[in-house]
Length: 412
Image (tube, rainbow, N blue to C red; front, side, top):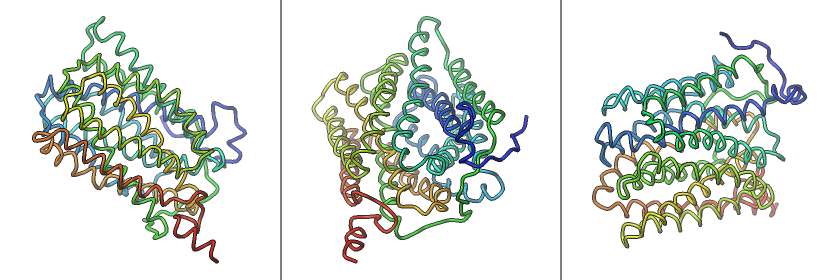
């Protein structure tokens, strides 16, 4: 097996048959990644509690290890000196799928740490390159709408796999090993197909192959940092709460994930239209106000004893609000120099994971003392994100990166 050596200019490729266009490759990769990662996430809490005897402390450490490769995503800059981004993305997708497939073979603390680290390298390097390719390949005027469809396709792929899991887990008495092998193997199969079926696409603007840190991108960096810190609390502890506090079983947790992905599949394209019409500032502000309310309500579940139905509804709302996060991508696309996209994607991914490396482990100890306090802290982080989002100008562009530079530009 080898990679197609043919290199095709992006403008030329847009006239190809649909099955060979750059956007189709983005759609396929969007479908492949969640087949492995989302299934791993859906089964993880039940698997580690039932098979490895995890508490909040161990799950916190597991997610800290999982986030370490994200912190070192800046290494992508060095790799793309020798390997094209498209190739690196597909190789990373292979690594994610293969490692996820064998998760159930390692039901110990040390074994899960090892296989999680390997799959996480694949996930984070894929996500870094994927974000870069999206911003390079998608035209600015259509990026929000297409990104909305990409989110919907990823959710649709997860919906299919989760639906099968809900329908067959009890009926066929499936094992963790079977499900992990099938979902990870499907991810591997799609990655191999993409390697064979698509040529190498060449964007018109060559990418800088060195670290880029620009002062005028500071607001984008700050939004990425807060997004990483806030999102970790949701990813690590929201689903863990559903299992630990309410005793949800695998098929029940998976059904909740199923509802999430169905909602995202339906509403993500609408959200793309919303971002295109109302702008990144308003879309992100709406997201963060919603997250403040959701996180405070999560805290109320512990402080006031609210029930599982409310917790499940909040979990779905949480996912919907997070789906608006692609507005950060289009904000950066509008303010960036075209050659900065690849190195800044790597830098931003590292910034996004600074807090993610230490927060899950530290909050695992807070969880033991005060689970509600973890979600109150998340609400505070969402409030900081809201303040930052309000600094985005209504029409961002180079030289108009924040409301402060926009006013300065207007004064001139």
